[in-house]
Picture 1 (cartoon, rainbow, N blue to C red):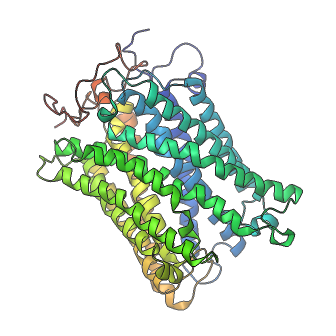
Picture 2 (picture 1 turned 90 degrees about the vertical axis):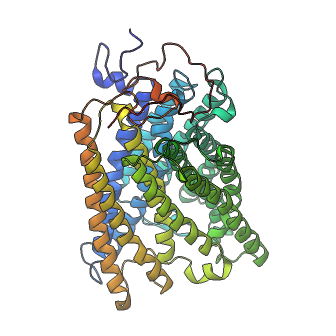
Picture 3 (picture 1 turned 90 degrees about the horizontal axis):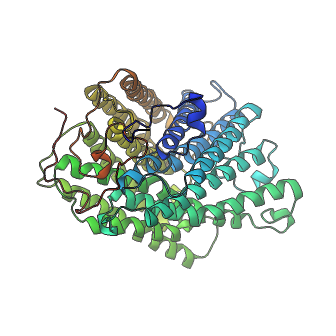
Length: 534
């Protein structure tokens, strides 16, 4: 077998088997992409239907129970199947080994097993759509999750299985970074995307088991009535919230850190400038991971714990904003006085910075005790949540998709059409979620099937935004799919990047490198690097 044979070329035997039983990290990355994007479109459809239901007051296309069920499944799909794993499992799998000069991840068979487990969890989640989705919300709060007649245990077990896949992926990524770096690839020569995946992997390994134990106790309560969370049996439902958010707030950074890593890769390439504050960006990823594990209580300001605890959690909420602000400051500093080449991935970067800034600043607002009491569980929280999770985290993934698409598939997409699709996405997203800040300030509760007349006009504007957003998403992925089949062959290094993945052919060969490279420079050393695309 030639080392230059593309990983996309199948060997003898069944083509399907050569993919679903492959231990090649690149193929596994694409397997994740196929499953995750299929469920992403399901999740978007559910969200669109929920918005459409609110086009009139009272029942429109569904009843309240159906709305609650779709709301729950929408959350499970978009968080546990899309946002949490997408950048780490797709581009972490595909790019990280190449970026550190390795031929594969540390445990290739474990990598394949984690994908199979992920598929099993996804099938379980979709099964609830057929049998009857849980109606508890994606948080599965006790005590309602203990008494609901829907298929709560199945939905909870699906999330448990998905969490197991995340733990295995995290172990693989940490070990790969520690053990398989190329000669000369010191910690301070790691690409910033690798730093982001490394910090994310530690969160997955440390925090996810807490969620797993919590979910198993929900199942045990429903089947055996052990009474850990049920107040009727002496249990404490607030304990469930503590355990859930001890995992789920670090999971917020599992969602956003990889996207921050993607942005840190793209900005220096299109600014033609060594990244400003490399160490600050690298260590801020670790700082976010550490401080993010200490702020779970800000989700529970109105749950009844002590004022002292509220002050402490509020303080840590403000502190965790510091490393996030450091990243944005360094991103802008890298662009300052750079020889900026404006192209499609760079437009995604600019949109990301806006979305992340809005989401981050409104998060600080929610971190203030007195303001949170007024805004808790209102549409303000929905808007903040989506600006961080969808506006920033998902947009970071879309940026990665447009940046690495030529490398992954060896073809180019229509860049002008991609720019227009991003503009429509950006307009639709802000039309959809900006009004929710006002709705929340005025008192509109989240998760409600209906609303009072004074909220109608802003609801209509938000619903119109959802239509524009869906058009933008359809244009974006239609363009990428067309590029996949009809796009022009991509050059090896279309953007003029200096990191190792751009020094191998497009698409990469099966074993990445003929010889393991020796690294002699920082990852953003642009001398003698030429941009190959007009």
